[in-house]
Image (cartoon, rainbow, N blue to C red; front, side, top):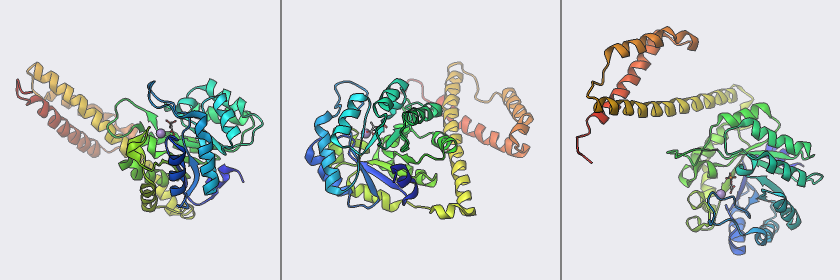
Length: 359
Ligand code: PEP
Ligand code: MN
């Protein structure tokens, strides 16, 4: 059976786990044999070549570490997977007997690299998992699948790992759930796994994001695990022990796919969409209040009052006049604008009343 079919049809979630990076034979064997105790874990991961942001960080041990992962797979009777970023990696991984390959986000973003890997795999029957590109470009992600399909590879799975962002207060890579949802819409045939480790960058958020992925009907999870996460050579803050992984998996609330055929499932999908929109509304409100504070700063420097009555009257009138296109009632628009205004005044007041000379 194709891996993609197993992921799609088996019990949810299909779990891929293992260390961010292979660090030693002992480390790989120890974490893999621990996580293999959990029947949800069905594929072992370990990074052999690591695409790091800055040079002189740990860039993976390379080929020497491949047999360690293969050995761990044999010992646990589980298939293995590693990231490949060029033809040399592909050749080495195939030669060592790795069962599944994956493309990292920094590879999917580059069509030349994707094509090179697809060409290197022409005629090879191996499952490939493709992470989303670092930027939120659905077509680029879909294009990577098409390059593999054109090279004759048909056992394909998507991995959602979030999108690069500058200094986000919560996520290492923002999930922007609309993109994987868009992929599900355009390519319903592809199974999709969520990688909460790289989305969150910290272990305390893994459960929340994993639950969200399950609620959005993702097929599986890829979670980085390490015998001693704080000592990991890469991505220490986001890795968990085998025990941590068990905790997360046992706390997940799983809605069965049978239920999703009924009204209840449809309701859940709609609510998830609403929750995504609410997330966006709150994100936008936060961004709006930051600008309000800048306005407050400018008013303070120029010694003008917070409330500019005429301006505010115009803002309300124009919102009420144009509310029709959003199908909102006049009363709702008025209440919402008043609430936003109150909150904005609160932010501006805070900025206005910083004592002169206070540090
Ligand atoms: C990884 O899985 O270790 C990795 C490097 O992921 P990404 O490509 O999502 O950054
Ligand atoms: Mn990692």
